[in-house]
Length: 182
Ligand SMILES: CC(C)(COP(=O)(O)OP(=O)(O)OC[C@H]1O[C@@H](n2cnc3c(N)ncnc32)[C@H](O)[C@@H]1OP(=O)(O)O)[C@@H](O)C(=O)NCCC(=O)NCCS
Image (cartoon, rainbow, N blue to C red; front, side):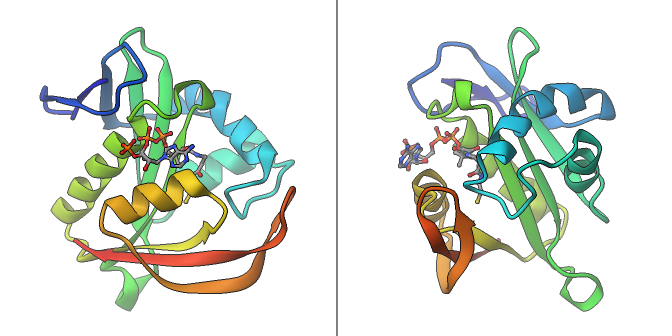
């Protein structure tokens, strides 16, 4: 799959989809496209510590309005938003040089390289913005796609909080704290 990295450069990522995709900073007008797939990811309750029945307004505030945050979208050639990511200080003030981030790819576009392209873009953007490391506080240990992707990008599991996530199918499972330098 060809991914445009935001400056016109096309890179190849994955092999499962046909259309080129652009990654760019999000605008408020992108929200309906983001929500179109975010709602199903949140409703599944398998990957985020966020209410399954979350309202659209609450989800928008959570994703789009983190203090000092930045949001990105992956856009297919037809204009459809097929992925999103956000990066923000993992802690305020004295901890603000370490980034936190979140990623969601439309289930219809999963497995085609969009998540990897978003992650590579976000890592570069975070480095350019002055962050010195990136930390994920709560990667559900049964989220095989995410764990494999983060490890392939150099993230290490620093710790696993046991029985910290209520998974709808697997019951109480662990949450990984994952980290890499930028
Ligand atoms: C995790 C997520 C962002 C990955 O996005 P994606 O576009 O499907 O991933 P990609 O196609 O870029 O695949 C990247 C890597 O993930 C891994 N992967 C993808 N799907 C996988 C699966 N079903 N099982 C195991 N590993 C998988 C592979 O290592 C793959 O590497 P490759 O490029 O060598 O093939 C996406 O599945 C998603 O949005 N999930 C729901 C929300 C979520 O879990 N967010 C992350 C929370 S920590």
